[in-house]
Image (cartoon, rainbow, N blue to C red):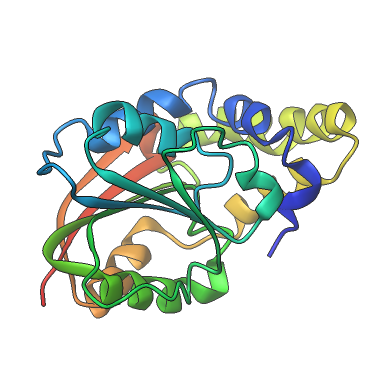
Amino acid sequence: MYNFDKISLLYDKITTLETFGMDNYWRKYMIRDIKLDKNSKILDSGSGTGKLTDILYKKFNNCNIYAVDKSQKMMENIKNNKIIKINSDVTDTGFNDNYFDLIVSSFLIRPLKNSINDYFNEMNRILKKNKNFIIMEIYEPENKYFKLLFDIYFHIILKYFGNKITKSDSFTYFSDSVKNFHSYKYISDILINNNFKIIKIKKFLFGSIIIHYSMKLS
């Protein structure tokens, strides 16, 4: 897994460039139809710098919101002291069984490529029955014409200039991680195998951004 500590101060700019500046719109879309009772427990799993955590707080500020990430430096960017921040591996969080009323994650499962099954298993353990698990990730586009533009922008232009600007290999990592990642159908199968029911799949940018809406069955 990539060492996100070394790009913690640049991460938000990187994701904005990667997603054509639309990443926050998609994060808001993830939870726009979700309704929760007061004092519900929400987990932003793999919160990073807290872009999704902030959106959760603005909508659910009467709930208990947790942010969990393995990178302490990334989490230092979360300044809201009402967010409960926990430095932990998302595949072994330490929370009690059936603890959360909602779990969300954005752009997390790709870095977890070899541990996705462990991650989904852990999220199923700590989520309450019939509650929502929502994940968003970037994939290789389905549309062959858009894929040509995507490949030129993401895998060539953005990778070259991004590495120059950040003075790191971060954009090479992001490019390779998308190119070598699973299909969204494969992710659906892993969710189902870990006792989740797929409620809805929402696609943006010709299938390059996909949100899985799922629910814990038992």
